[in-house]
Each structure stands twice: as structure tokens, then as C-alpha cells.
Amino acid sequence: MWGFASPKRLRALGIVGMNKRNVYYIAQHNPRHLYPTVDDKLQTKKLCHRHGIAVPKLLGVCRIQQHTKGLIEFLEPYDQFVIKPAKGSGGKGILVIIGREDGCFIKSSGTRISHQDLQRHVSNILSGLFSLGGKPDNALIEEMVQFTDDFQGFSYEGVPDIRVILFKGYPVMAMTRLSTHASDGKANLHQGAVGVGLSIKTGKAVSAVQHNLPIEKHPDTGRVLKELIVPDWQQVLVLASRSYEVSGLGYLGVDIVLDRCHGPLLLELNARPGLAIQMANQAGLEPRLKWVVEQEKKTGKKADDSAEQKVSMAMAVFN
Image (cartoon, rainbow, N blue to C red; front, side):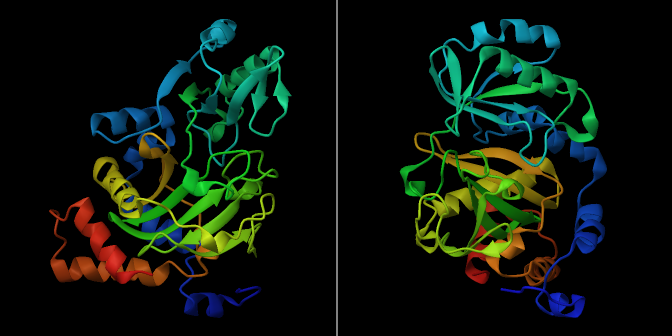
């Protein structure tokens, strides 16, 4: 573990800091006019549908406060669903419902929420309480993902997801985020989820952290985290790589979930992916990003390299 280290030591380890990420990778490779497509989850879904990329099923959209009046009636056929702000960030405002009991909805944490509380939550989403810049937002209602049994015991009270960092379509680093009781069933590291670094070559766990500290077992289930292996790993990476082709963003974070029935599904795209993935992998991004730059120099920036080709090359080079 790195612990406290000088800037010189971090540079030697190949750690990319926020300033370098913003100046050299985001600003130079992510055209700002493309941001709205990924900052708005509804627009991202529409983009994915146009290009045949699988996403969780959208049940409905609340666009105005008046829609909250008919919300409970609309939800009557569904016992499990997810409500999220279209322009939210950091996992804020996401409500995961796993069932009903005695006239109440049951959250993924097991706590109850009344009909009125659910309507109030959606009203808060619409008013912009959870959105970027506090602007009025839409509330998306999605089918809840039934995660694959391969993650059984590795996640608690929620659906785990996989974050892949892409640079010019090459998957350069990946981790899975496992929900905990502390994170209220959300796969968000800032809220207490566990981050497990994944080998690009194999999809196997390499190391794990919680609150930026090393961890060997899941805090709630006791499962040894290094035993985790993501199934259909190459398929996951190809799905992620295709996001570069459709979004046009050179430096991109792709969040994917594995559904028991539908396989890998694209959850969302992030034009400003965080850097904690380096902690989870115990490795710096810089050497991998430089490899992509050198690769493009060698090949003359071949535009015809498919997602499958880029994934194969990355799997052959990166651990």
C-alpha cells in the first residue's frame, strides 16, 4: 500500500492526479459539446438504443411535479425497481426498491419507505436536489438488475457494478464496486462500497480497498475478495470499448452491470471518471495511458481498429 507518499514518489509509481487527468486527458480528448450525452442518463440510454448497446430496461420517466401524483398507480405492477436522477452524480439520489410490505416499499437496506416518502423523493429529484448544478431534472424509473450468481456473497444489499476506464477505446484499467450495508446498497466508493481492482487480462481480482484502505474480506459477508472472478470478461470489455465508438469521448469511464438473464448491460458513461480506481488496483494509470499513445503512433492512428481488436491488444499487454 502506498500510504503517505511525496509527489515525486507518486509520479514514479505512475499515479495520475486530478490536475493531470483534467489537463492532459479530459480537456484534450473529450470535446465539451459531447458532455450532455453522457451527463444525462436518459440521453445516454437513447444513444445506446440507437447503436444496439444493451442497457437496463426503462420503465418510465417523471418529468414534471404533476407526474408524482400518479406515480404510485404507475408503479403498481412492479415490486422491484430503481429510481434515479437523470443528471445525478456520485450515486446521490438513487433509490433501490426490492419489494413491498404492509403498504410500504422496501429499500435494498431492508428499511421501509412510505408512498408519500417515495413521492417526496421523486419530487426532490425533479427539483434538482441531486443533479449537477442543482438544475431541474428528470427521474428515471428502471427495471432492477438481477445480478449474476457469480457475485453471490461479494455484494450486500445491492447490485455490484464494473467500472472500466477507456482511453481512445482501449480498456486500460478496471474495478468492480461492491455494495455494503454502509453504502446503503449503492455501489459507490464515496459512500462506503468496496472497490476491487480487476486484471484486464483475466477479470480476476488483484486487490481491494474500502475508504481507500486495504481490505481482504467483504465487511458484511466475510467473503474473501481475491476469490472474485468476473464472468464473460472479454464480452464486458468489448461492451465498454464500444462506448468509445458511440460517444466520441477519448477518456471515458464506463459502468457495466451483469444481469442474470440479459448478460452485461451498460449502466452509464462518465466523462470525468474518478481516480480511486488506481487505489483499488494498486497501480498507476500513467504507464497504461502512455502505452495507448505509443500504440497509436506505431499504427498511424488506425481508425479501423474495432472494439474487439482493441480489447484483444489490451488483454495481451496489461495485467
